[in-house]
Structure formats: C-alpha cells, structure tokens
Image (cartoon, rainbow, N blue to C red; front, side, top):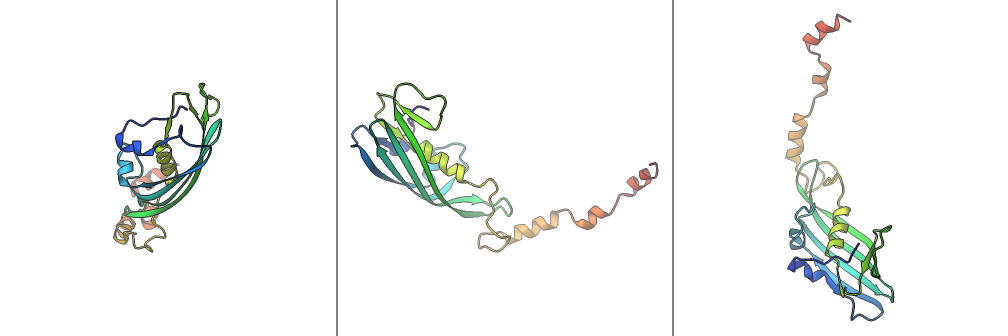
Length: 180
C-alpha cells in the first residue's frame, strides 16, 4: 500500500510531515467530529465526538503509528430505530516503511517512497472508527435506557407474528391434508 494522499482540502489537516521530524516519538492530537465524516461518501458514521491521539515513532527505516481513539459515535438502534451514543475506545497500530518497492505480501505495511514527505492518516482513522461500529447496534436493554423508543417497540410487538395465529391452521390446508 502506498502512502495515501488526500485530495480533499479539509482532510489535509490529517497530513503529518515526517521529513523534518527527529528520530523518536512525536504526539499529535485530533478532534474527530461530524465534519470529518461528511468528507466520506458512504460512511456508516455520520455524527461523532471523538479524540484521536497519534504517537508517531520515527525510526531510521520506518515509522510506527500508534492510534488511540476515544469518545462517542451516534448510531441508530436496529431494534427501536432511535439514535443513541455508542462509546468507542480504539487502539490500533500502523507501520510505514521507507523504500521504493511496494510490499505485496503484506498489505498491513504502508510503503513510503523517497519523494514522499508526509503521510495522511485520515483514511486510517476513518477505517478504524467504521470497523469499530457493531454489526448489530442496539441502544441497550429493551426499553431501559433514555434513548430507547418505547412506543416504537410497542408498535413492533403488535405487528409481530402472534403464537396463536401460527397455531391456527387454514381450513383449506386441512382439507388437503386428508389426501396423505
């Protein structure tokens, strides 16, 4: 994977110039809000209030990026459809090696060429947050949180298949069962 460069002007905030950095660790802080996700067309997350800390460890042959993202993302409950804040605490690591040839066998490593002088981490932050979103998002125990839409749950329970309805059989099918 080549060092990714962002074309959107608003995402240029997440460029880290590494050529002037001394060897050792450097810390960068970012606020991740709704405007960040507006720049990604198909984002699962639309609203968030997150803090992202990035520790960049500059070495002779590589850069090690350690991410720590904490805060809340707003999700819609898959059960009652109400919006609720979902807490996230993400810790990830990314390695970027200096070299001209891309490493094909391992896509976990970013290759930085001799002409590269900065690395854009917006795509990595976006990916880490979206992967942390649960596949099935629920606001918590049914009806027991301030975010849960109790009226919606009542309406859904009314529309659900009742056990009595499934036990009653259709007389037309009963007539056909006699032919067995």
